[in-house]
Length: 144
Image: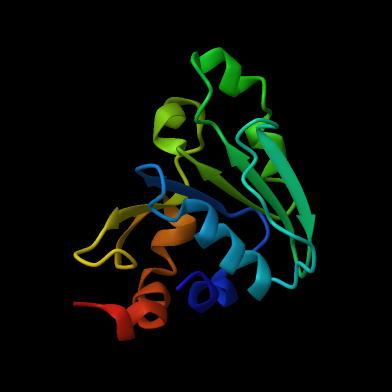
């Protein structure tokens, strides 16, 4: 599914990934990176907080699971990251007040089977709201 929406990604986009441990936030990022032409291993930045990859666009991959205070999130200079490429933030709901109000929120939940997942997309702000129809079309074959 990440590969299906990758063609919609533009410089400056922010994607906030939300879901329980093991739901597939890093797997989603890996799929996005493959489609964006990243040719190096993509791993969860749980302990480093941020990884940066180069493909068709620069990919900034953050994991804020260990962030305990909003001030720590502000130290990550997220707004500056948005100047260069696309930024995906795992556990981003924890720091929503520190994030720009222009983003795509992606909630990943477990499905009935062990490998089943449900993804809910919420467009926030003008950038993604303008692409809502394209996003719908990109994921339509998985809609239930």
